[in-house]
Length: 144
Image 1 (cartoon, rainbow, N blue to C red):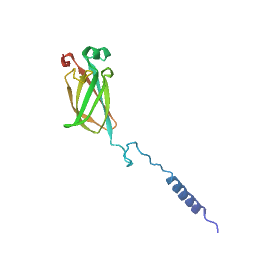
Image 2: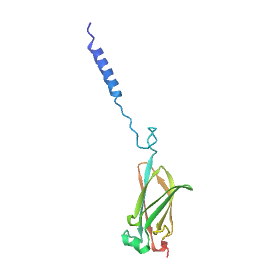
Image 3: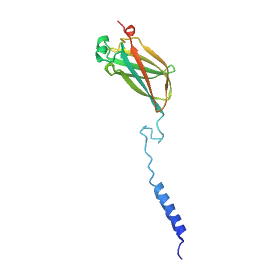
Image 4: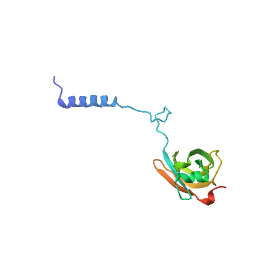
């Protein structure tokens, strides 16, 4: 007895769906957890700085600054501290979604402050976005 065409097509489509489903690959997102869960949502906080309105590297030399230090707080809890060369005039940090405050200071080669600390309040980091903050260290903020 011959099988009707509709049943053969149904059988082939079922077999095809089964084969396709066997080819699904689940990769790790690189989070290192091994759980297969995606990493927590993160955004970027970018701090761009200048000294007396300039981003010329000679300004760093003039004030004795070697590094730009950014300390990020979530409430009163320290989230992270990052430094970048003063010559870079900025840095970017990947942070989980949340509300933060940051302290930004210019440091000399011995990690001593050469400027007063500028406090940035009310920083809202949102997943997939880059919060860019421009700051300046005017003459009045530079330590003798």
